[in-house]
Image (cartoon, rainbow, N blue to C red; front, side, top):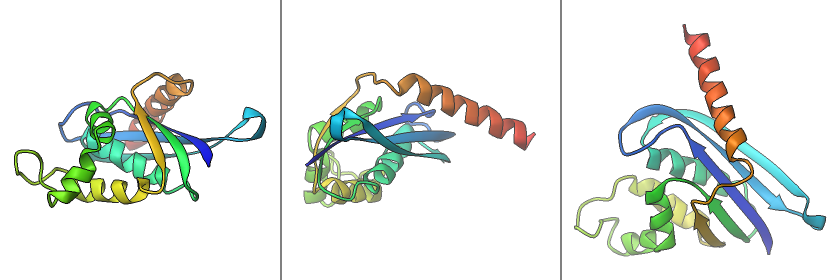
Length: 150
């Protein structure tokens, strides 16, 4: 089973709908501990949760074989949900939350649950070696887009 890291950064913070962007990197740890990486970037409107879920789905779609995955994100809701296996419970409850109300982003959570099923995973809010570069790259691309729009 391969060891894979998924790193996710977004410009969106919190539950407010906003224009923003996300960037993800999928890193396979290969022979002699040399990493192999692929990534993706997207501008979109949404909440922080929605952007992180979108990035996670795209990243998981890049992993073709069952793997041992570490997911790095600063989105507390996604971290807590995955750590506590809430998506499994939401699925059992017909995508209703603990208060019996329809779950926000239920379709995305359902896709995440399906995509992550063959893997062993952990989730962390720890800093990582790509973090500074990813934040710089997000900022650079947003500034470039604003310049091109004006």
